[in-house]
Structure formats: C-alpha cells, structure tokens
Image 1: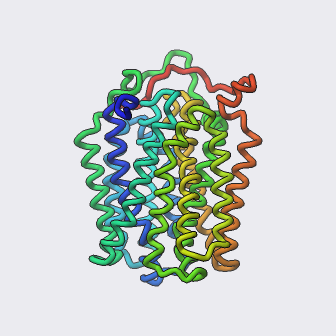
Image 2: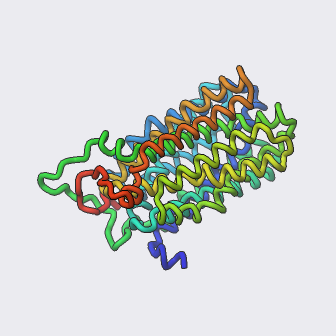
Image 3: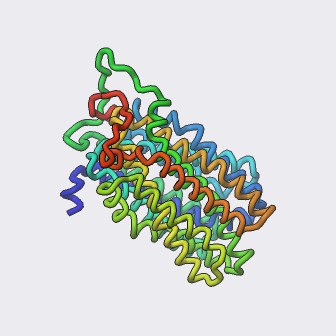
Length: 418
C-alpha cells in the first residue's frame, strides 16, 4: 500500500538515509548532557554549545537553499552527511570549550544542509494531496532513529563509555552517506518530472525572499517554537530529572526514546488529518495539547508518569514539524521550495540559538520548574498566532470563501540538478 502511494524509489532512499542519521542523532543526543557534565562543562557553557550548534544552522540555512539549487539534492546530501559524520566522531576527543563549540558549529552547518536537501527533494516529489503524509514518513524515519538511538547508546556506554557513543554515531552517518552515494539517483520526481535546472521563462520575475517568508510565516513560527523547545529540553530536562526529581542519570537516557516513540506512533495519523482537514488547524491543536503537557510535567513525581508525559509531548509537539513542512509545500511553487526550506530551517535554528541560553538562565536562576513553564508559554504564543493567521491554511480559507495571497505563478518544475 505504501509503495503504491509513494512509488518513487528515491523517496525511500531518502527515508533510509534519514533513519540512519536519526539513529546517529539519538545515540549522540542521549548522552550529550551526561558527557559534558562528566567532563566538567557547567550548565551555562552547555547552553553556549547548543547555541554554537544553532549558529551553524543559522549561518548555513540560507546558503543551503542555494547549494541545493546549484548542485542538487544528491551531492548536497552526500557531502553534508560526510561532514556531520566527521564532526560527531571527533567531538568526544576535544577537550576545550572553544574546540567543542567549533565542532558543534560545523555539526549544525552540515545538519541543516541535510535537512534542506532532503525536505526539498521530498516536497518536490509529492503532490498536494499527500505532502503531509510524505513528510510524516520523513519525520517517522527520524523518530525511529531517536527511539533506537538511546537504546543503542545504553549498550555502547557500558562497553565504550560516552566517547564510544559519539564514534558510533559517526559510523552510522558514514553508512547513510554510502546509501545516498550508491542508491539515490536524484532524477524521477512526482508526476515524472526531473530534478533539473530550468532556465526561467522570459519576463518571469524572481519571487522576493520577503514574500516567501511572509507566506510561510506560520510554518516558520512552528519550527522556531520546536527548535527553541527541543534544544532546551535535550540539555536541561535530564538535569531537572536528576536534581529535582531524584532520577538516576542512567534512566534519563530513555527520555529521548519515549519522546521519539510518541512522535513515531502519531505522525502518520497526524499527517493524514492535516492533508484532509487543514495543516494549520492540526498544528494549532497539537500545540495546545503539547504545551499543556509540558506545563503539567512540573507536577509529576514518578518516573513512569514522566515517561508518559514525554510520550504525549512527542506525539503532539514533534508531530507538528512534518505538518508545517507540508503547509509550506502546498503554498510555495516547487521552483521556490529550496529557498522556502532554507528560511524554514533558519527559523528552526533561530529557536535553537535562543532557547538554550534563555533556558539556562531560567534553570540556574529560577529552577527547572520555571524553565518548563516558560517553554509551555512558547507553545501558548504559537497557538494564539495560528488563531490570528488561521487563513494561512488554504483549506480553511477555501471553506470560508476567502481569497488567499498567492505567490507569483511559476512553472511547477523542480529547480534541482542531478
């Protein structure tokens, strides 16, 4: 059934590479805070390292869109995966904060190139009736990685310590690059189109960047909120559990897995709901439910209840990402997808850049509970925004009989070379 709905073999190759990358992310992120703590890195410095990672994403988000347009998805994916593999492999052997920051900066730069290339290719290969479904499987590939990664990390930590987990992550990323090199041809797209560069038609004006950015503002705020939340929680939730809830540090490794498992089980259902009823409506509901769960987490006392809360948060908040990508996929021409995805990931990085430093101040000055409350406030702000700009969703605007602002008409062809 899935193969009939998504017949393009290259889509499944992207999923396979992203799955391997997701496992690599899960392995390394699960022990990141513990590794830094064991090596004497204070909480405020951890926030700085997270900011360096986000700064790398910010610095290369917009250039990534140009790189994908110029060199194509395959070459971009291949080089970016190899770059990430190198960065994560050498990370545990670095001993100074400055060296760690540099590694995290390039980690972010290569990561965003992977995301922009993969997302642009997937959106170009899907039609308007199943974009959220295609992107939900993309998110599921990452989610599976985040589920298996922490479990794998527990075994690797016992055998080779936290250093071994980062090396294992690098090996997985190298394998992902090998899959792309050997199997991804970067040609057939949805409807039989090809990922080739097409010369612009005479008199066709290039869409202004601010026009694209304004059109996808709801998707951008969604990914900003998620980046802010994710980067903060990865660093400080394990520390909150250890210091305020008395949870052994070894058990906190499972938190990432429960979050990813929630996303994994809900994302395809959420994607189909978004395609059917409206992407922005579904995003609003998910934001409200997930934000409420984050706030209620402060009151929980048992580890089992905490895992359940994290599971629900993953099922709602993490599932927003593929739906927000699908939303911009239906309102942006294929020829502008590379630039739109670059803006999208830049907003994600901006959230990651601002979240950890601000959260570290809340954590160190106020406490872990106050930090979680302020994260819930971020999601409340997003929900209010989606109410104000509800007509950004074409389905909702169509039901209300409202004309939506359209981007300049362009040929529906992808502007990606082989």
